[in-house]
Structure formats: structure tokens, C-alpha cells
Length: 327
Image (cartoon, rainbow, N blue to C red; front, top):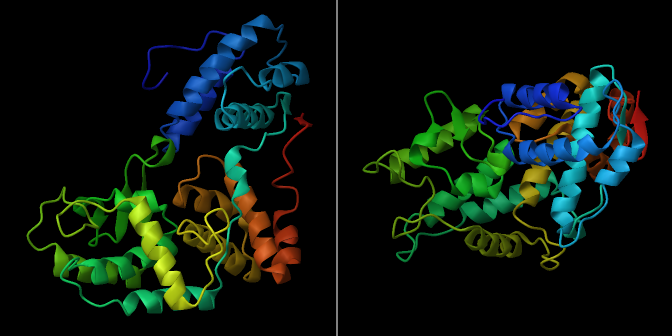
């Protein structure tokens, strides 16, 4: 095994080993998934497994919620086994897939901004004036919002950036220790890269490579709560209603908007989504394709005119997950 001396030893051991190696070969750290699957490895030893068949009996027993187990971890346990079941199917074995139980975070509903709303947000950010209390804020925030929308970053990924992570010579951003401890390089458009270069020349002339890319007057980085508060102010100036903490819009919805707008464009262009969706998934740092499947539904809801095009392009590539058996 990569990064650990503890091998799998249960009835699915060879395929679990191959599955984790495949995940890491495409750039994922896959640490959380690895340890969850190690628990499943021990769990599966209590069952008779023939020809690596992941049966309904095993999956449903694994899917039982444990005492003092959070809803989030419970859902993740089931989800990681779903991924392995799909892998088994791809290898020609039988794998049953259970329903994922929604965690408490499912109360949030994503908001997809229109193109006009995004223009209003950028205009509001560009109208920010210099303030001696925060001398670089009027330069940082217009770029931060454009990077969120231009590349679909998570806000935490941008706030964790160091100066050395933004390479304007190559036109890409190096994301390190992202969600699920993943790492990736994210190419930028020429216009966004030029804005980054201009920003660096204006505010980072005397800073070392480890200095925060977005920083406050005292040189420390912003927090997510700082950005969320400011984003609500931008919504007010842009004339976009903020409907509350559980409804939003939230700053993370800019990432949702980037993905949905990109899928909308591809659908209208009749592009090959079978080829492009895995690329998009890796670009935005999704740990699994099921996340991208959710965006297909979200895009169809936000842009009803592309629903037929989306169905024609995807067909049964991404079947509804839950209570089915891949044979």
C-alpha cells in the first residue's frame, strides 16, 4: 500500500488495494477513504465472500448506523463503499450499492447565480474604495471573487494560498492540502492570470514566497467568516437579496455557479460530457464522480432549456445511485 505499512487482509483485500492505488494514481491523497475501507476490510471478514461479490446483505449490514456515530460520518462510510462497488463493477464483479443517508448539511440548497448577477457582484467589488484600515482590500476582493468564479475554487483553498502557489509564468494555481487532503494544479484563463500578475506587482513586491496571497493589514490571512460577511455586503450593493444563513446565497455558491455555467455551455455546444466530466471533476477537486452527477441535476434545474440536451449527452452514464446492483 502507498503511504502506509498496514495492508488489507479481508476477503476483498486484493481489489481494495488496487482501488486505493488507482485513486492515488490520479492525484488523490485518499486518506479518509483509505481508513474507512480498512474498517470495512475488517468488517467483511465476518461474511462468506465468493468471487469478490459485494452482496446486498454485506452492504446493508455495513450501512447500519452505529451508536454515537454522526450523520456526516455515517453518510461518508456508505459513500466510500459505493465508490468501491462501482469499481468492482468496472472490474467485472458484482457490487450492490446502498442509498446514502443525507447528512445535516443537506439542509442547504445551492444557489446558481445568473451571468447578469455575477457581473453585478464584480461591479460592486470593483467599486470598493481604498481604506487606510485595510489598504489592500479594494485590490484583493475583486480578484478573490473572480478567482472563485473563474476556476471554481473553494473559498478555503483561496484563503490558504501562499504567494508561491500562484505561478503567473505558467498561468496556474497550486492547491495543496485541499478537501480530503487532495492536491492539484489549476490552470487559469489568460485574463485571470493577468489580473493575478497585476495584483502581485501591486501588493507583493517585498513579500517572501510563503506570505499569504490574500492578506489583511497586519499580514495575516482572512478567515472564511471574514469573506462570508463581506460577500453579504457585496450582495446588498449588487441588489441581490440575501435570504438567511440556511438559504443564502453564500460565497460557496460562486463555486456551484462556475460548475453549472460550464456544464450549461458544454450542453449548448453539444460537447462530449463522457470525456469532459471527469476532467471537470478533477479540475475542481471532487473526490468522486457522484459530486459531479449532482451538478448535472443542479444545472438542469437552473437552466431548464438544456435539460433535454443534458439527457441526450449523458444517457445512462450516471445512473441514479441507491438500491441497485452493478453486475
